[in-house]
Image 1 (cartoon, rainbow, N blue to C red):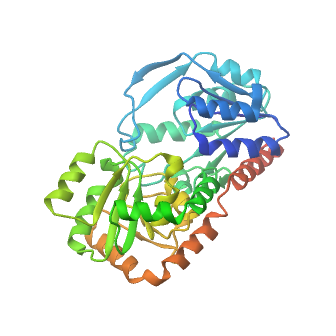
Image 2 (image 1 turned 120 degrees about the vertical axis):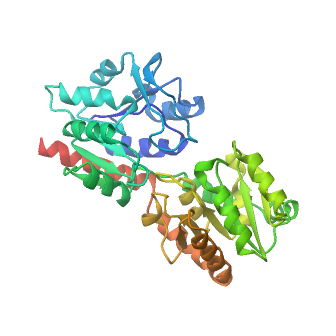
Length: 388
């Protein structure tokens, strides 16, 4: 089956999904992407998998709109890109099924090809947003999504919260599948297992990690809820525990100022750490915590789970229904300080069970693999092609 995946950008974690899907469809997968946006290392990896069926395009034109960076809350910015040669490249790949990412960006091209084709090409959209991330979508965005859904034959959702949004808010009643978003869990698990006790001891000594170690890895930006976590940490009076923040961002100075003002000696900002060097940090921790105020599906959550950590997760993170259960973690509302305090205390009271809960995290995340994501997508492709 000839499948063409149109994606403006992707990173390393997507490549194993592309590779697995390519095998399932008989090595007839084409990926068309923006060669000016995707990092060169990722382009090289994809070329090794797909060869000439990895097609970079350049010369994108932005008609109007405001660039939206990763630190911005959803629907606070927009852009309307036009890519020269995109529709032609899609048609030249002669797809039976088109895959796209979300309603905007380069999805206009699959929608166009699907609407004005005579070859019965089908279109599957991969979607990540949740009712929470789309709470400020506005009427025009919602009406647009409802309108173009007639040229989307199926949607592959991140998880149940995404399905809630497309069925309830958009009234979408065509086939759904689940699970295209996967993290690089195998690599994280391998690097964590390879971390030596000496490396772990050096981290614990360097940052004076005492008691239960709560680990956060990610951007230090307002959207991630770090300040909300710190305020709760202060009032919780967390004795015999350390909060280790790994990352960088525009809020770094504000975080340092808060820590110094309140003499939080058990909160440490480690700064940015190379992705491939995170293994010892995972191994030095007892629990992963993410207080995000808005995320579709934080890839760092399944990564931490693959490293054997229980998870304390914000309810505003779209991955929590699938990944965080009472057997391996806790959920909390970062906008409710009492909810955060209660969770911090709960983790502290379970010290002797954290290792066992981390093993349960490994078991749960083992089901969210690139192979599983590819199988879900391919089964959906087969289903809608048969209906043709």
